[in-house]
Image 1 (cartoon, rainbow, N blue to C red):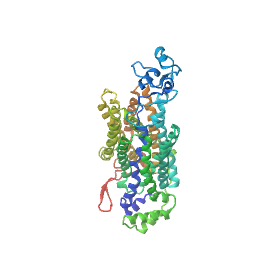
Image 2: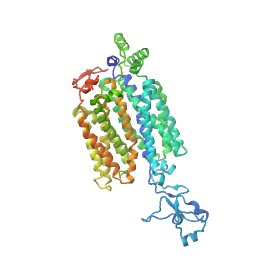
Image 3: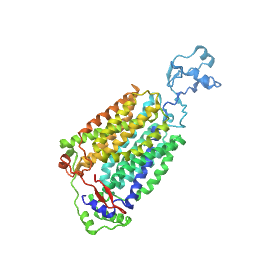
Image 4: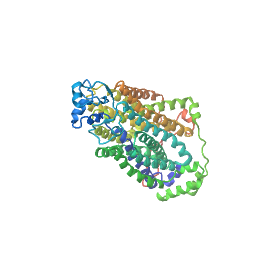
Length: 537
């Protein structure tokens, strides 16, 4: 579609039509962070203990303190055991006090939770404590696995059935199973519904950005990805406020369903991608949408230009074999994918451990959310001044070093630990934006989408492993941080193998991607009111 850019210039490459579409597709990113509420805002250490109400059958007038003293063993520090109880007997309380109980067992009748932070969480509702404690990390992994499956599943779906359907169906699924999550009677229903919510989230995020980008001109090509990330950061702050005032995870799910229902209503009116329609041979439908976009932007498209593009034959696409057959492209792909995996592992490990950096969990989440807003603007500046290669290496090496430094300061210094973790997460988030730009500039048109899809899938696998890596803290609290910090440092150093692609034209063939690139001079892209100076990526 080499000449479709001419169509966009004639239609208006960032007019009212594109702005409305961009807003419609980016707005849901304000809501998507809410899906992490039940996984992030919980209090695993709820000062729980075994339910020992059996003693009330023989001593109904016992006080709460007397019940605990008679039924629960004590730990060496003098506190009650959270996971053990004395084996029930039919003695009267005076006999138990005189002779005592020695035989212990696990909590046979469940647990009682004394959570002073939340009214209800998945930990308290589903008893994810003691032997079930790791099930909580499993829930995080299941959700991220759903995101991975959604990215893989809705990629081919989008190619076959269109970008429009690949954004609409995930939103419907997300609405339905958000409600199901809130109504879930047990942990297994919760897991199943969260897996489907993850599928919907993964499918929508990728295809909404693609649909918006395919309607926007070169000068504003990064707007869809950057605005989505900025709104996602704002969404983190918004759902923080909601959870702060509504500390019941089920009620939070129903509150989330409200704006999702609004999105589901209007999402059916978004247009299809004209580029996709042309590739599928639906020239008449594509022409109709092009003329509609031009009318909304109050522009006219020359008939000769429309005919030229509509009669253009699709470019033959490459394959995975093409990507790995070239030694140079294979090196580029493995290097950038390793970086993408390392930063995703670090980012999600830090995000899911937001409550363990010493400060109040709400303050930590506020810092994390607010810090993500400027990072994407900083990346845009860094990419054009320092370049892609230096920016990526700097973000990964400095970010990984900051993560490792959290182990060098006393863990009691909560402010220092939280500051280092926030800065590390800030840089990992920025590195993700850089990778999204970099990977598109490293590979030729024929395999660009293939490389992007494979890299994204690998990165999501890494994010899915974040809860598993966090589980390693049971052996020593330093292990997760050592893993993610070391991988970030290693990937940052390996990024030296990549070429610099700043201000170079996108390669159109494998030969161009492997060889020398020509610097693209700044050009003037026509706008509605004024010309915009930009650098074509």
